[in-house]
Image (cartoon, rainbow, N blue to C red; front, side, top):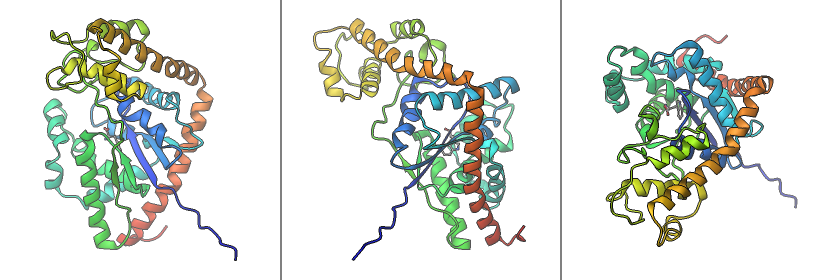
Length: 337
Ligand code: TRP
């Protein structure tokens, strides 16, 4: 007897990255690079989260440039637009619409407890706008629109993912099964990359130039930044983030970029000094970034291709998003179009 096989539907992944300037090596290791690894196994949608970005004032020309640059970097880091759906969040109008609907199912109290809101309103005390406050609702909508099963996020976003699940469960409780409840996806190779100047802190592009590597830094700049990176006076190469945070950070970067486990990396430095460690991390960083930078330069010149990618992405994303939006609107009781 012949057996017909029902095709197994791939699990869906949705993630977003804000276009707030050139990403750091930490963003690359922690996010962009992992997105590519998921492309074959999952049904992936990746967006440039440009609606979120205006919670902080942006200079229009720079903002537009940053958004294109981010798309260029996603392509340059190897994402294949035939496999993954790549798009600008602002091109899929359903994001803003769902955010409004979900606002009405979210409580002031829940939003006020978000640590990122507290941090950001302290940092931008002159512009504590409502968007900053409802940011997690927009993000919840991003995820729920696509019925995503998994959401690759960094640690700083787990609270947002939690609130997304709460909102989804609340809506499902009221109207039946509207949304898939998403789970966080935390990559196995989730090396944390710390500041080169203050290794107790996460590497961040809002800190001083010398404290981070940007994915578009030239070899000379990379060399200089690592040369100035903080180590210690213990003169021993061991992975011990507590007592040797600077040295351990450089070791982590090597391990993340070569894919070798830490033990092996540490062993390779037996009898060697900090100069050798810095030379090694410099080499592997330059080697990793060179092909990305070359591809980035190529793709950014091909405006027509970029346009094709983001238009098709918005179309594919929009079709999925519209289904979810209509489903919810019908349940709420809106008159059908
Ligand atoms: N808020 C995320 C960040 O700043 C970006 C983001 C927006 C996102 N929408 C998302 C991430 C949906 C995952 C899923 O990093």
